[in-house]
Image 1 (cartoon, one colour):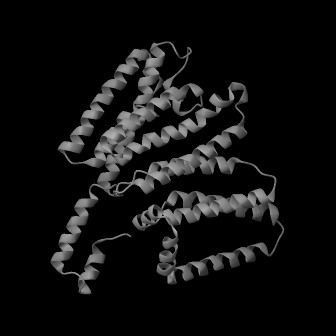
Image 2 (spheres, one colour):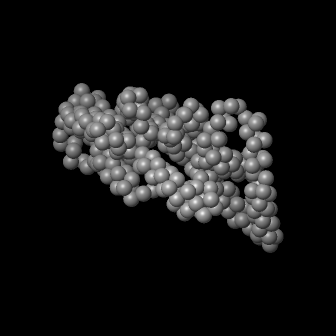
Length: 344
């Protein structure tokens, strides 16, 4: 539910709140909102600056940094990580800025691949010509050492600070791992495209299930599951959508899975499922329009009728939403019912 100052003013006009109560309530909500990520200018600046710093030490690192050598890269990563840890403690404990603390803590975790890579180069574990920036652009099973180390550092930082943004580098690393696992499992000769799709699909599904478990276990207002849902859904839907099927039944099952994703997005209040599900459903309808019913005159009319039927179903749902929701929640396990109560 989105609440703004006008809603409180309406409540005052209807006699539900006094002017003083509305002012105090708005101040309370505003103060609490400072600690929750939102689309406000200050938070945009926080995340923009943080992502620039993280990107500078990872995605946007230039080839010139290879001149520092393995020990040089390792020393730079450790030094930057020490500064990031100090800033995390400062923002969290002395300034009371958990959002900034989460960004600097994620910066520390994002430095782990660079530190491990520098150590590997120093010990001669990489062939001549290897560059760190390829970590973000090329798939190689040797990146797995860096990825496992990043997951370990992310777990330690999450245990220490309990800041939701720390899940972001963990989720990205899991996504990278889903791609790098294929050559590790199949060998260089078996790097087939079909296997990559399957690994992406199943790894993404496991990430979504992990996010769901985190969602159920979370009892605070902090959203620890967001990044896991985002990259899990991306990996799952990407692997699913890249699978080719010559059967119309297979394509119809693809549509059904995407419709389930849309419903799941509504139930869990996770827009990422609705977005990907909507894209998949649109793709299937495009297949029907351009391939199956290419010469049909009736297809647009039938699709219009289906669209109107969906709108009518939405009207019926809105009229009886409270009754239906209450009945459905009574059938759900207690943890899942509690999750839906929090999300809605």
